[in-house]
Amino acid sequence: MVNIIEVNETNKMIEQEKLDVRTITLGISLLDCCDSDLDALNQKIYHKITRLAKNLVSTGREIEREYGIPIVNRRISVTPVALVAGNACKSSGDFVSVAKTLDKAAADTGVNFIGGYSSIVSKGMTPTDERLICSIPLALSSTERVCSSVNIGSTKTGINMDAVKLMGEIIRDTAEATKDNNSLGCAKLVVLCNAPDDNPFMAGAFHGVSEADAVINVGVSGPGVVKHAIEGVRGENFEVLCETVKKTAFKVTRVGQLVAQVASERLAIPFGIVDLSLAPTPSVGDSVAEILEEMGLESVGAPGTTAALALLNDQVKKGGVMASSFVGGLSGAFIPVSEDQGMIDAVNRGSLTLEKLEAMTCVCSVGLDMIAIPGNTPASTISGIIADEAAIGMINQKTTAVRLIPVIGKDVGDMVEFGGLLGYAPVQQVNKFSCSDFINRGGRIPPPIHSFRN
Amino acid sequence: MSFNIITGITHKMKKTIITVVGKDTVGIIAKVCTYLAENQVNVEDISQTIVQGYFNMMMIVDTELSEKPFSEMVTDLENLGIEIGVRIRCQREDIFTNMHRI
Image 1: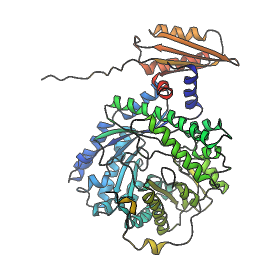
Image 2: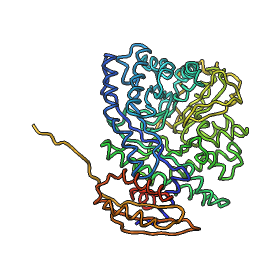
Image 3: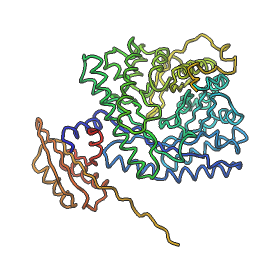
Image 4: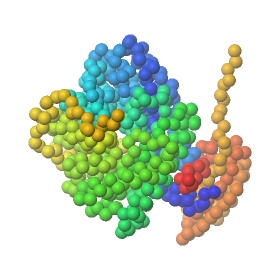
């Protein structure tokens, strides 16, 4: 039987250290919605989503009340739209109509984001993929809740450099299309390498083709809890530090596992995975950067940062895998800039640069995330950054992602507000030297030697 | 043709944990217990400490016989807490057992 000390510990985590479940994401397969008629396709998609997600928001609230644990977001991910809508969408405009259907379904079910306006082009692009990708700027500027992602490479396939080149241009076009809103469209667009099929976190969430008809995936959080726990072992050696992070990650993940099971039972939809990620928010005390600083760094970005993040990421996984029967998604530490007060402060202090962030992405679960860059950054430079991140993912057999926001009309040092969980960010310096001849080569970068395991 | 219509899902009743934290005052336990008794909630265990004038209590209760929906009870107890000037939380036990027991 639980005792008062344990009960108080849990409630303190929730009330003072901002422990929460970041998202319950309902993954829905749209493969059975395929139709050659655009109207019929849109209707089928709308009905399937609203039927399955009807009780998602209310069930989330119910669990939140009964267990006393905040569940911050309820979201939906769907099969990559390029796979579903190819037959009906003859133009980019047709694809935008599907984005609008997704947006309406999301609004009517009460979720704040719906992911899966996506295409998987790791090795090559079909004309359908290209049409969808070209429709992204308009789709994201004419919808509110739709998130888009494009997977441009994997360890197994190498990197599709034609898609990398195209995505640099699409990111710029999306920034232009949403320039009246601080280029917010780019905050809902992520370019991935080795994208997982079961990621519950936006903007990269989609419901992969390897998944069942519908699944519940849960993303946990808890940077504040980890930070508080390691405050108690200041000055102790790395063994003690690692053990503390691991035990804390176990506790945090157990809550996610419980919520996932209860949600799955009540919605009568199978449980998929728990994503162990430490996901920060812009509020103070909910920051991954603060954990790294608590480990002994004066400011994130200082020498030692990559090692500290590697340690954190690994211990979070080790604690988490024991706590859940199925772990998946991105699972690790997130290092978005605009969504983490400690990262924002570090950029403002001058200790954290884009290059250091890139190094950090080699050892954590995502990539260059929510970084504002000057609005006049050339498309080829953005493509170069995407290629660098994809190379890190491909060689290290991990997911990497790029979510850059070239904020039209803003330059280095300006502050940009995105609102809500997306936070705010100072515009960061990008290397001024050109890579356009490299990007313009076209074709594919072959997969690394260690991908041939058959 | 007849259909089996599912009218409700019963959960295997588990224990509920009620915690009360706040400035110590006369009659906190009495008021909480009165509410529980009125709603057929059985108190199985109480532990309580007072640290520097702050009241800290945990009750393990069984809500199986209560007809009140769980989320309503959560709200009622929260409001009762506001009335007395303390923080009352009512949570299903699993969140604690899952976190602290392997």
